[in-house]
Image: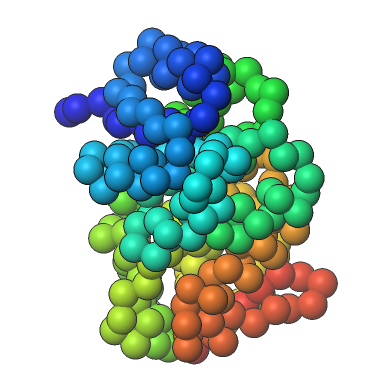
Length: 222
């Protein structure tokens, strides 16, 4: 099996070189882009297994790239940025990022997060789980979801959350249980809320099936 391909989108050459060196040392293949236009070109041409995406790359920036990708792709995205504010992190997660690393960071930590996100992605594909709740269909084996028969462009994190809710359809699922589905040790209850908010939008007319249970979490109803 060919090693996973990581697309590094970073406009600081020295930092990009360091990340590339550490990733290749661990057996990954890499591609590099220094701006948003080139990043989208490489994504279309190479279909990477994961994207390390700096939020502040020039035109389009990381947030706009994520918006574009999430219209058609569930490729795992780890945002890399110097922005430490909580609001920036939540915006990235709402748009569909799977993880978030703030500069300065250890390259080894980034490599560890890349491996973790890829492991979760592989696990999702192999999980033989299918659920039908009202107009919603979730198929983890095929790694897809549908609303009234129409395919839904969900990120990996969104699909995991939807599957967790579908698995317990009709039951109020605590935020702590949903938090475990994200696999992010730095995540908190507000992170879950951000993902669910974005998930509702992606579900279109089926978004109304997700109910907020005050003081507990969320429920998926038929």
